[in-house]
Each structure stands twice: as structure tokens, then as C-alpha cells.
Length: 556
Image: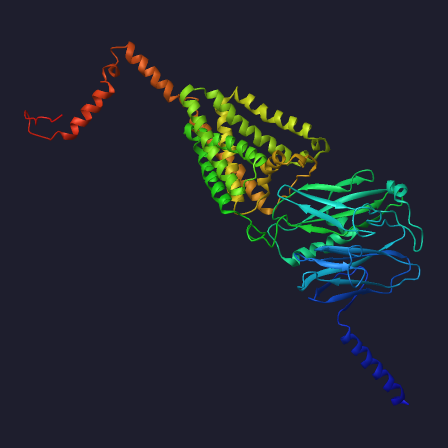
């Protein structure tokens, strides 16, 4: 009797085990649980979820990798209207009344093995359907977020959602139901400089579901159903960021999340300036020299007035011409930087010559004041104040920014020496910060870089430009404050007994010349003219030292 029951059981076990080994490309997921897997080359994985509860009406499958694309498909042979290919890909499947299992297909489009993590999230009939009112992309229901980036901005687009519905029910009309929906845009920042796959997948798990997204993410904005389903955010090259969207039904107080996407605003496959080696040699040389000059100006700028004017003229002219060259030409970055340096030198020399020839200290101090005003305005708009909705208007932003820039030179008219020394301390210390940024990424560089982006990009007015402060940023803020304060205080104490500004060499020469003409008692009046002095110097070169009362005749 025992053998009668044992033999069928053993045969069943062997049969089951053989079935598993023959179907090795079949992966079973559990609802809501992340699963790491590797997609083999030249093979298609069958993704299966079973035992779906009857109250679940639609399900999303998402799969994330760091660098390589994967294809998720409803069919074994993908077609444009049944598959999605991306590093962050996803599909949404509505369920039929009788359905308690689903099957998708996962493959690598590049014929290379791809490692990543995936999860299947269930939703009920009251929850919104992400991408349920898609009219733009290939999929009928598209829960994906489409991301594009460049040096200046990152733009995300997504299809509008639909309200939830029961299994087998008629789809709600989008033009009637969409007024109930709102979209919350969320953002996760990855640790600065961390490009590991483990870190990315760890944060992807936090950004996948609605609950973890609201707990750990940073909410950027809320879009109403009448607004365009897109958002533009400032790019931070090399900084890992995860974006996600939550569709909320304001009537039923329910929500559902789109497929999160990530970007580093740089390429891992680029031969030059990829994510792992972003710094250009030209940039490092340019800002290293600028940092050394800034450190000198921070502590000795007012004492060596001509050197300070050259540096300030270089910065003022260089910024203007970099914007003009970038907006009007298609030159590469190194060439633009070289031309900027050349024009900066020309601008610095012209500012020094204008002071040397005309002696107008106030005209030079106004240029210096404009530089400090630019820094002050940039710092103000670097704060959360810059993300206020009113400043998304280019007119409002530039009028406000210009007013702040122009107010600072007006203060200099009352206290020119103190204003000039303050600019030396603040601007010189910030040049040191920019020099450090050429080697170690710091968010403080975006104080001025975001303004530069607004100059160069006409459509930058709708972007969110706040950048997270990392641990290194607090250290650099301390360095900036210490250098700026110490340099300013040192120069104020050292210069308090000296004249406000050094006199113009040309004006001093003119005054000395007039004095020699009119005052015969002035010893300088009896100085021989220049030709006579040159002749005497030349004669002295051929004269030999001889005993007293003897002299060798000269040939000249």
C-alpha cells in the first residue's frame, strides 16, 4: 500500500523538477516585491504573476537598469504598439473579470546581458490609471515617463491618466473624467559622485510606490488636469536624479504612480567627458588660474589696484563675450573658452588703461560694483525664492535681477573704498570655490551657472533651478565665508590710514611736467632732457676708471 502511493508522488516530483529545468527563461513575480534578475543575451524572459486578487483591476510591471536598455512587451515578438524599450521601462495591463494571472516578456534589444530590478504593483478600481488617456505615444495605455536632458535642462513628459474603473467596465471618457485628476512631480537625489548600480536600485525601490515616494521624495510641483503634462528642471551634470509622477483622484482621494525614471545628465558611453570623467583639461586650467587670481585679489586686491582692475575687467568682459559667442556661433567648448580668455584679457587691459589715462576711479568702481551686484542677485535667486511661480516669467525675472545688480553700484558711490574691498573679498573667495569645483563637484557653482543658463537658453524661464546641498557644499560655504570675511577685514584694517585709491600714473606725470615748467626752484626742473640723459648713459659705458686728474679721450 505504501509503495502504491509513493510511486506516483515520486514521479510527480521528478516531472515537476524536469519542467523547471526545461523552462529556465520563465520568471515568477510576486505582487509588490522587487526582484533582481539578469536578462540573458539572445533570449526572452517570460515574466509571470499569478494568484491576482479579484479586487485588483490593473497592474504595472516596471524594470530598471542603470545604463542599458531593456524591452518590456505584451507579446513574445515585440511590436511598437505592444512594447517599451528604455533603461526605465514599464507596462500597464488592465484585467478582465475572470483573469487571475498575467504574462509579459522581457528581453535585451542590444544582444547583451542586462542586470536590473523589477517589480509588479497592483491597483484597485478606485485608483487612477497612469497613462490611461494616452494620445501621443505608441502604447494604448502608457504609464512611462519620457525624459530628455541637455547641458541646461531636463524635461520630463508623460501621458495623461484616467480615473479608475472596475474589471470589464466601459472605459471612462477622458474629456469628462480628467478634471478630477492632478499630478504631483517628485524628485529623488542620489548621493553626489556615487555612480554605483546598487545605490541606484536602492533608491529606485523607494521611488516606485506611492507611499515610499511621498515619504522620501521631494515634491517639486502639482499640475492640474488643464496644464500640459510635462515639467522642465535644471540639469546638474553628473548628479544622479530620479523623477516620478503620482496621479491623484481629488474626488476619491486615491492615487497611483507612473514608472520612475533616472538620469545623471551625462553619458556613460561617451569617449570624452563621460559621467566618470567629466572635467575638461581646459576648464581645470581656466578655473585654477582664476582661483589663484581670486585668492590674490581677496587679500591684496585694493593694495595692488591695477591687478585688481585687470581681474575684474577680465571677469566682466569674459562673461559678456562667452554669452555672445555661445549664442551667435557653433564653436566647440574649448574654442569658446579660449576666445573668452582672450577677450577677458583685452577687457582687463582696457579697464586698467582707462584708469591709467583718465584717472576716473568711480567709473572703474562701478564696473566692480556690477560684479558684486551680479553675485548678490545670483545668490538671492539661488535660494528657494528663485523657484517662486512669479519668477518663471522672463520679464519679471530679468527686471528684478537687473534692479538688484544696479542697486549695488549705487551704494558704492557713497562708500567706494569699502565697496571695492568688499567686492575683492566676496568675488575673490568665490573664484576659489569655482576652482575647487573644477576638481570636486559642488553645488555652489550653480549660483552663477544657473544665471548663465538663463542667458543662453531662452526657454529656461519655466525651469526649477534649486540644487541640493551636499556635505561638501557646507564645507565650501565655510571656506567662502572665512576667505571673504578675513580678506575684507584684513584689507580694511590695512588700508584705513592710506589714501582711498592710488593716484593715476598719467595724471601724476602730467602734474610733474607742469611743475617743472613753472617752478625753476624745483630740482626736477634742472633734469636734462631725455636725449641728453641717454647720451650720458652711453658715454659712461665706454669710460674707464682712472687715477685722479686723468681721463681717457672719448670716441663719441
